[in-house]
Length: 404
Ligand code: ATP
Ligand code: MG
Image (cartoon, rainbow, N blue to C red; front, side, top):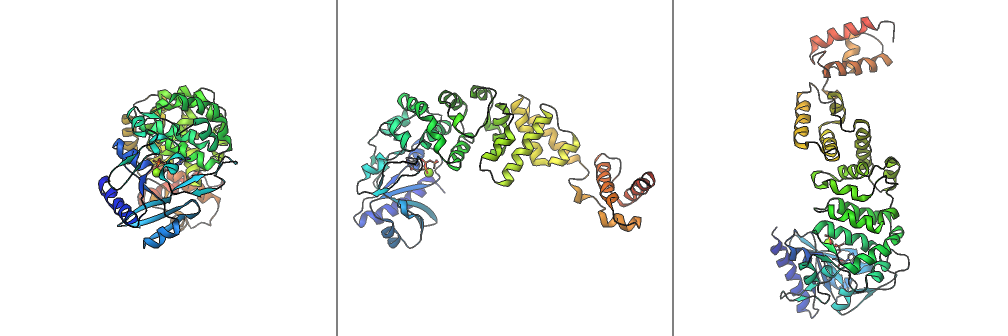
């Protein structure tokens, strides 16, 4: 879907609302990204209409955040977040606004937004409202808070991390005042939920230009107020690593912890809200890295890890030790493809077959045999065919007659 096409569909929504006498606007990140020629994820629309009224006008809607004024409008195969103009009362728990007030004026709605580049609006005729000079800030590649940065960060300290995250995504700098306020207010981040922090951290890790941001994070010491664990080195150390070379967020967490030499990493992984699957992958890659350091994976390690994780491991390791990643990944692939079996279920014989052949009773010996048979096939000491395996099993039984 072309960006302009999505905007065209959104414009039809604006027309419908405007024809009813409610001037509505495109707002938020989509305008910023459109201006920067970046890919557009979701289009937000702001309207003076209340959520109930929006749901009455459009046949397909999802009430995703009615309390905060947001309705998802499904329109011509696209979805648009339509939110009532609103302001927020004082924040006293550092997380959520106490009260949301719906207002009639788009200017008040723009005033509650975090940064100038996110506080612009565009109407159906492509006329921009830009009361905080967001377009100018975009031009000078600058992330600047709307209004008094200290107040805005106190209201919602997550904005500090959002600010760094936007710098990492867009290759922008923080405005001087905004950065000073970020440094002063960094400690407030401890009041923010891990889930919200993690979302921003992962966007930062996945960003195209994270390098320049490590310095900013170090300056504000913000990571001390997040569940990072004790680092042996400063965040400046991260500047020499290219996180964009890694493919998955799991790889990036592992590189981050390894590069910062956080020895208590496994303890820290528990504090982040990873899914079980994600935590398992991270912990596994991290422990292999601790064991192997810059050494190549052996054939049997590649077999145990599987191709995807072996490649992931190699990418992290190559970045950490400045090795030739392409060449090493190539080697891993070649070794993987040369393996006679890719996992145990590829073995021609399973437990049942062995019992049939040997006419023996089930027992612990069977597990030992299968494990050794698997290793023998993997190492080329036994070929994965019936004749060779029968012979190998025969010999194994003779060798270990009284052992099991
Ligand atoms: P992206 O979707 O790429 O993460 P975005 O700017 O669209 O970036 P969203 O979280 O989707 O960010 O929020 C949409 C808009 O809502 C923002 O552009 C901003 O105007 C406003 N906004 C979001 N979070 C905050 C916040 N914590 N404080 C103030 N305004 C916010
Ligand atoms: Mg968005």
